[in-house]
Image (cartoon, rainbow, N blue to C red; front, side, top):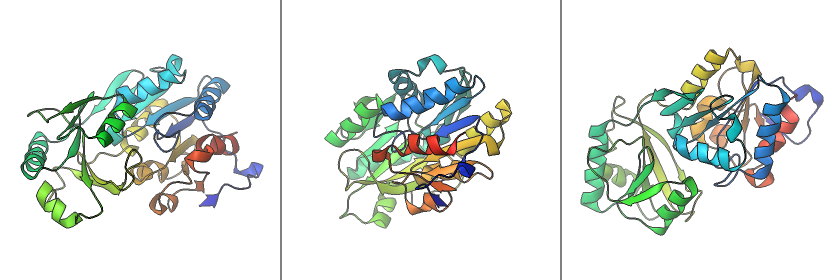
Length: 288
């Protein structure tokens, strides 16, 4: 990887497609004005240029945020969306992927959380279900534009479950309580375990997604439909859930300066952290 401190012209690439995570990459909770300008300038530079917003959020939340920063005119024509860390995706306004969690798994985790009084986030299409509506969860829901509902109804479609851990809790014991210790590959996948970027920084989480769900899969499908090669694709992210995209062979893969080492190790370049507008900085110096 190359730290982006000095940018010789030889580092610049001809790019037709920009793909970016949202939270922790284009801003903290909201897309920053500098990031919004960078996307707008890229799309205006060439009519054939495209952008994909690839987030752990629901698609509606990413759409609302893009509209809020003045990019709504490009939605469904030149901006596509990947949501729920790759469990849902749209291309040219049409849904090309819709893969929720196994209902039996959701029911099992729900029952275990209620039985043992453990709080968790269950992400529905537009509603965030929680066992208890804490201040922390209200912050997350407000940031993403979700309706927050206390109580997890049976048979509700869920795409992602966030299971929470505090510093004094043992992870292996929690996995036994949640019912995720023996999670089979055909039931779901554990994505990552890290610190929260919203609210209490001591809170950590284990994220459960459907099997074979990753942002990179719908990204590849959209690239193929557009006829854009990896060599002309710029990809940037800030967490290990962006690893598949950033490490795809041939792409100009960039890790934010605030990213964990697992992402930086597979990226071609490392830019400034989000607080220093690393998204627009990398865009300026890596894209012709």
